[in-house]
Image (cartoon, rainbow, N blue to C red):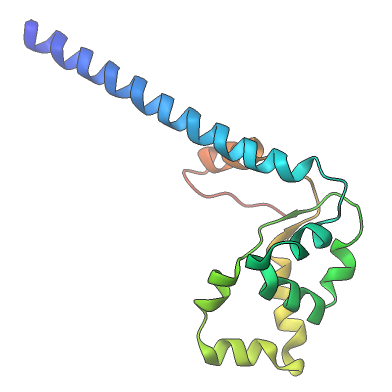
Length: 137
């Protein structure tokens, strides 16, 4: 009997620690998102202020999506950083930067934009329901 209660106690302790760790992570994400959502600046104005998104700004301008995102409408952008672009091969980058492929680049970037204001909690809940993945339109 003592072995069984020790095991149950250990599991309860583990679940308590695990749930606290997740709560702290969710709080950190919510705080990060709230810093950006309280600003009156457009997405383009905010993105332009971060050097880590300079490549994104360049390709948004090349595809004219900067004009859409400069509007004060409600958008959520999953913004790839310069590091994400650096992981692409040179051949891929050259193809996407070719003016002939402007539509393909625009299509790829459009997958990162949602015409709605999504909170971190909405995204996290969708990911929990989807076992780690979520789809948005």
